[in-house]
Amino acid sequence: MKWSVGDNVMAKWPGSSLYFHAVVKNMDEDEEIAEVLFEDGTLMDVELRHLKTEESFRPKRAKSPGRSRRRSRSPGRSPGRSPGRKAKSRTVVDGVEKKSPSRSRSRKLPSTESSSSSAEEKRLTVRVQRSESGNATRKVTESITETKTITKGAVIATKAKTLVTESPVSDSRYMVTRQRLREKSETETVSAPTKPVAQLGKSHEKEFGGVLGTFLIYMTIPILPCLVVLGCTKNDCSVTKFKLSMIPRNLHDYYDLESVLMFFGFLLFHAIIYVLPFGYILDGPPTPHGKRLPYRISAFYSLILTLITYGLFYYHDIPITKIHDKQFTLAVTASIFSYAMTILFYLRSLGCQDSDLNPKANTGSPIYDSFLGREMHPRFGKIFDLKLYLYRPSMGGWLVVVFVELHRAYLEHKWEIPTMILLVGGSQIFYIVLEFFWDEAQCPFMFDIKNEGLGFVQWFGELVLVPIVYSLPVRYVAEHPAKTTHLSMALIVIFFIAGMVLIVLSGIQKSRFRINPYDSSLSSMESLPASRPDGQRLLISGLWGVVRHPNYLGEILVGMGWSFACGFENLLPWYYPVFVTVLLCHRALRCDHQSAEKHGHAWTVYCQRVQYRVIPYVF
Image 1 (cartoon, helix red, strand yellow):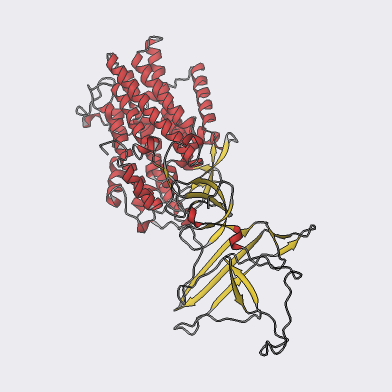
Image 2 (image 1 turned 120 degrees about the horizontal axis):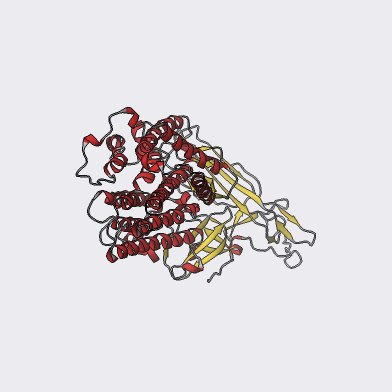
């Protein structure tokens, strides 16, 4: 039988033998798959052979008394029949007529080894009322089947719940059993499928080298921003010429009150904007425990107010370019704050419920769990999400540093700013605005917000590495103006445009596919059906058919384009693309591992089709 979109069907729930009411939303006759919407709101892929008509589950219409009269029989023809004996009632299950006694009898389940074994079964049926026109109508009601079996000291309890929509029936005595339990053995029960509950971190393999690896990162990671700030000056920018004598030895060189006020003032500035009723509320993706959290999307207003504030500082001659001279003390302040917040939020997580914890950071090791973030989505109230908020001062800080470098170049060269500074600074501003402030709605679906807790990785990465390390190329070309050649400019433009095309197009394809896998704009693209009841279709064509993470490849190309502007005289400016490449390749491994757990066989098939993770023919 051929089905069409919009048909009301009885669909078999994948992984079970149960049929439920559903509506056909999309069809793929080549793969013999239909996407159906169950009454509880679940959208799943079901094979066409597992679709049946609703009529096949309804009882046959009883003949009217006038057309089917019972012939009386003489006592001689039915000698064994008692005149007062009632006729046996009949029920219909899955379209099959079965006889059942009219008298209600208590039925005991087969006994087991334990004499205390017992079973309880409760069913609610659909009540039928007749409308004024005489047509019988089933009311929307709940049908619950609950079975409890106690055997060998263990309790097995299952509950299934479905909804029945209004539809006409022919008999006011019509009763529908919404679920049929098939006994495979004396003590086996069949339950409706449920979504798996995320396991806590003790069952997962440790990442980043486990406790020892995270401890070493704790001890060594602050060296990186200090190396970038102290090692790359106007006089020199070489790792090989870095000396211990360049490290400040006086305490006042690490602490500066003005830097502290700048840092905390900037955090407070973005926190105030975040709580203002700007933008709109977006429901994020399901957490590992099945929750869907709301997010306030208003980063564009944060951008506008940041630019206005910077303009006011410039208009009133406030020396905002001091940020360039205070980058070291700002980095120290941000680092100390990151360590303090990591400890504070780890202590806060000790009082959280299991449903609020990161499944992979609940190992019992304070070092490892605080590094990844033990609490999954820490919030103040219902809307103020700390992980999404940290993106504001992070990307906003990077943007301000770029403005400061361009501002300093303008004060030095006036309107004859070197082309390379304009090219690198302008491209970084374009990247920051387009990637975050213009499209903040994609951030809740990013790997770190969706799958990681709030730990040292988030605090230090967003508040220290992004503003200090990511702005290194523009600061280098501002202090070390190199000779501009047509080749260098061509490499910058080609790599930057290629990277941005990969980032933007892959993001558009992923967003449209996530919202509607059957979007008309994606009609030429191939996808895989889900192989698990709670899974999703996988896009295996377009840019996602070239590598598994085309957006990561775009990030790497953009970073290489900026470093080409710095030339090859010093290697330190190339720290940014190297750091981003290592970071994203490691993240791709972690993402693939989680996708394999989530999608099962469908992910295996996808990996066979798309063999390379980030860089074609390399990785």
